[in-house]
Image (tube, rainbow, N blue to C red):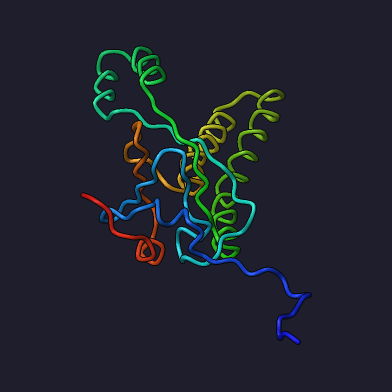
Amino acid sequence: MHNENLYAAPKSDLNDGVTASCQRIGKLVFVPANHDFPERCIICNAPSKQPTKQRKMYWHSPWLFLLILINLFIYIIVAMIMRKSMQVSPGYCDIHAKKRRRNMSMFLIPAVALMLGSLALGMSNSGPVYVLAFCVGFLLLIPGAIASKTVTPKRIDQNGATFMGCKEPFLNSLPVGRK
């Protein structure tokens, strides 16, 4: 007779093999090409909520920002041609996923309400108050976008990508890589 509970949920090891490929480089995380983040929260290192949403991250050389001085339209075209991308799925535990959703909705819901309300009321009456409300709603999209970001690519090339934005508990769980 064995002591194993046949009705228990399956147990998995947090070191799922992906960890061995991801490396810590200072405060950055290097993820090789065709690999992904470990299935752990990038903030507290707890098991992440599944399924983790895949995100396509884009990066281009910071030198391309100098093209804005010449012409914004030229910068946009060159940046879209020169950008590199990688799909990753940084994970969040239940607590941090809820906190991220709350922070996003704290800015995005009032932004959408102000913009739609000003458009609806501005069609019936014209005035600077409606334009101001629309502009404030539009400006609230900026902190909403900041609150919604996960990790930020520092560099993407053919070998993989380097990301910033992971916290110390997650970083401490990764092996230290090359500099």
